[in-house]
Length: 238
Image 1: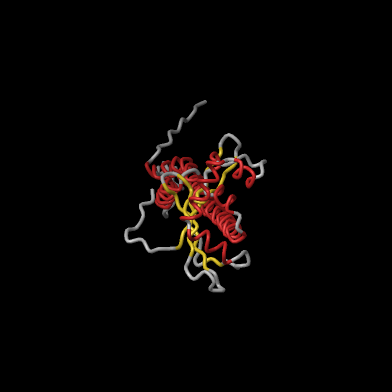
Image 2: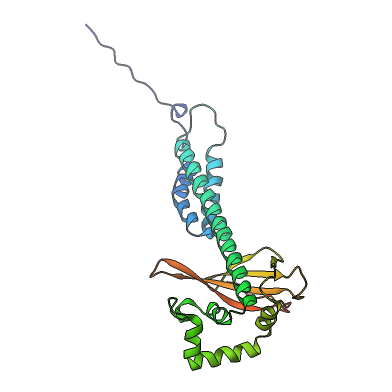
């Protein structure tokens, strides 16, 4: 009896090539989650896509090692990248619609002559009167607040002119709402025109959205309210 032992020689052709770009794509695909938190991190899914395309280039012979994880990385980076784009756009659209509604209501209050409410809405939420109380009575009883209101009313010509024009103005947006960040705070610029021509100048209502983490809500207040004027120097927005 005899036995024959065979030896299989492994050549380089039997070992699939390894593509490190696929592993890099997979790691970057996982890190692409940060794109959903900060839009600046969209560079991560973009880099993952680049490495993924390199890893999935054509090959001959055996399927290279690293292509499977490259596919996973491409899927992750595509998902998180798309989310990183759509979430800020959806948020910007929502804030813009809220700002438009708030600004229109504010202009209507000014037209009705509710100067106390106009004054309150120009303050940050933490500085306003208690919302359960009668605002007019509160201003009548508080001599300092009343004096401040009368002083501001005398100097604030736009409020007086809109009040004299009456509450029936059908305000129209002069241009799309501009939403931007200013020193970490959400702001929205709205510009309005009176199609009837009673108010001849364009009106700017700039609003600021301030989060209230304690109550898990956000509050709007009017940051600027005046006739539009062209700036000689562009504002710095951070």
